[in-house]
Length: 335
Image (tube, rainbow, N blue to C red; front, side):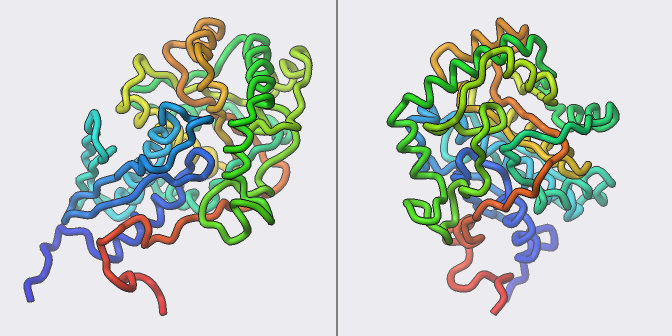
């Protein structure tokens, strides 16, 4: 039997990569990705069959989600003492290919973010009144540094409040959107019943207004603009902007946001993202104008000190991430 070259990814390493990718955040927790391992290369494949026509008609959030999975993949490879180079094709099923060869040991920041993967949650609630230190704010924003992405703290919270209020009213009245959201919410009795391996747990949602709610349901309240502005003034927000609107820029924005989120988690903070208003026709362009953003907004990230613990979201079995790679029992799967 011919042994694999020493540089090839070992089954134990593939397990670490798969676990990291499986814990990446995704729109409605759809986990729209799979992996293919080829010696020292890992292809991250977009599952285009996962569709949210009402929330994500162009598939932009799905691609952003794959970007978050890419960031987790790159980080896990780094912790395995692998140096990585990444290629992102402009189209096709492969979102990114990560070439991982033996490299140096990870630094403290990489280890801290890697260990935060299992603790990261979507905190769809208001945060505690305790302010985030300037040191933590700077570190969280810096973690999202990416050549294709600009990360900014938005100004003009009154304009943001007015636009979020408008978006809330639109989505509350959209029957198709509400049916789709209901299908991807893990109700105790419903389409995403207990034990489902995808979808948003009911316990992870709240009955507050945007941005805390994160997802607009029929009973999501719409406070007046002054009240919402006051709440937003207390929030720590970052907007991830890109010059254009290509798939590569969506992947880059998703990866930048994921790194930021892990840095926040490593520092004892919690976060959540807001993307659904950005799918309304003309919303992003108007938001960029009113908030004086340096490009098209792709993701709004909010973070702060959590008030209550948030349950983890369900996850697909690791074997689903690697279809056809390992017939039968996975090499790392316990008896």
